[in-house]
Amino acid sequence: MKINRRFPFQAKWILAGVALVVALLAPLALESYWLHVFIIAYFYALLASSWALLAGYAGQFSFGHMAFMAIGGYTSGLLGRYFNTPPLLGILLGTLLAGITGLTIGGLVLRFKASYLALFTIAFSEILRMVIKGESGITRGDQGLSVAPLFGTEVISRLPYYYTMLAVLVICLILMYWLANSRVGLFLRAIREDEEAAAARGVDVVKFKVLTFVVTSMIAGLAGGFFAHYITILTPNILIIPQMGLVIAMAIIGGVESLIAAAVGGVIIQISLEWLRQFEAWRLVIFGALLILTLRFARDGLVTPLLQRIFGTAPKAELRTDVSSNAAKEEVNLDEA
Amino acid sequence: MQYFMALATTGLIMGIIYALMALGLTLIFSILNVINFAHGEFYMLGGYFSYFLLTWFTGLNPFIAVLVSGLMVALIGLIFEYFFLRPMHLGRIERPPEYAVLITFGLSFFLQNLALAVFGPYPHRPPSFFSGAVDLGITRVSADRLTASVLSLVLMALLLLLINKTWIGKALQAVSQNKDAAAVVGINPLRMNTIAFALGVGLASIAGALLAPSFSIVPDVGAVPSIRSYVIIVLGGMGSLPGSILGGILIGLVESFGAGYFPDPSRGLTYKTAFGLVIFALVLLFKPTGFFGRRRS
Image (cartoon, rainbow over all chains, first blue to last red):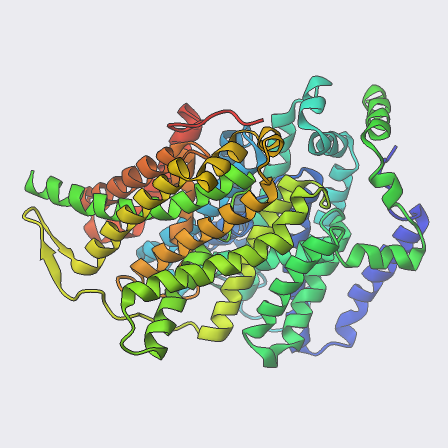
């Protein structure tokens, strides 16, 4: 039983199906350059939606998401460079390392109030960037670490990369959707509504927060691995704080309480950035302003309400009911579980 | 020993400036219960404002420029607080703690990109306060940094006087201790929020303007100082003014000794900030409330 059903069941899946078909057929109409734009857009969609799982469902804010992405990318890149590790194994190990790092940081910080995670991860991310930049003997620093392409140097077409990134995105979205709608997701929302009440009802608050943090960190690491083996060069600039800001803007402007909306936000913003190329640095100023205004005036983001309008539902009343009825529903669910 | 004393001196000098910036962050946190994730960007704005004031008005006293840039940034802070943070305290925002983290981070993202668009990625460096270096007997220190440090000390003393001796300061303390009780005795907590925020970001801006002649200003110049301030306020105990002064000096010393005694000196500079993260982790492990922290409801 789900407590936060935002759209009528069928309409939601029909829309997802249509979007998937469009994405599968899109390469027929796209030239190689736009194929590249979409590959990068799917990469950002993956980052934005996994960040939204942590922020929108668990209420925890990580400013180190790009650091986990970089751990995934650099692990695979460095293993390939020094030990000739095949890309897929490298991506797997990078994802694992991102998870282990997430477990360490989460175990240390998530016992405390949410702001500590934000404080610690922003510091961790900047320091990781400095280390990567500083240890240029190993990582090549600002010159860039060259990474083997996923499908070897003979494959010039971007098509296989397009479908790979799309597949990774769809699989991760399904995984996250399942997690968010499982008992874990329920507990997470209970924690977010009222941590003490959840703890009092027997929810192991820290365990579920750490679990979510590890899962989202691993997804960021996975995204970073595939990104590295597509873009074939990594520099410390991929984890500067404004990059993190961009991913957060995507998730918030899309709608942080819906994985799909955050992913759609990622795709739309990445493509708009390409469209608005002539505005150069002002593009990000526009999205910065949009981020602040969305936060202040449209906490559900801009994509979620749009979808709601199309389907003519008003799930807000259900989502934001007073605490008592919410608690009652959670009680039912906890008993079922 | 000579080397030790030299490192201690430079650490102390920098630590005092770090403390000034962290003090602003602490002031905001203790009154508004908000961690200002845009603190580094206010530091950056302070640097740019003093640069442009000195470029446009030739012959302007650099200390006046520092002060004016502080006031300009305080005004920006005041406007931001009024439109984006005050609604939080009026109950117009759902989940205020989450909103506070995101809105200040959003402001940081906006300001950093705005600076990049307006000023470009190239470094700007305002003229020195005093050129050359001063021989302190133990070690030679650049006159600019010494000036910045002495001025920071003066400002901190003034701030503590303001907090402890004036009506506004006492009202601020009252709000930080108990909002409702403060309101009962006729203090408007909303006004105190605005004052604290403007004052806090003004201090960050002054720190930025004071250090601008030593380290050039670029759009992301605020990242390292702000991260340092986060470590300092956790170390000092969230919301404690004496804690952040002590924490600032301690971090200054740690960075100085860490860089000075690092086996490979060129790397020592790279890892200077990383020592802060280690301290952060140690505080969380062994004394999560920091030096002077108190439990907050």
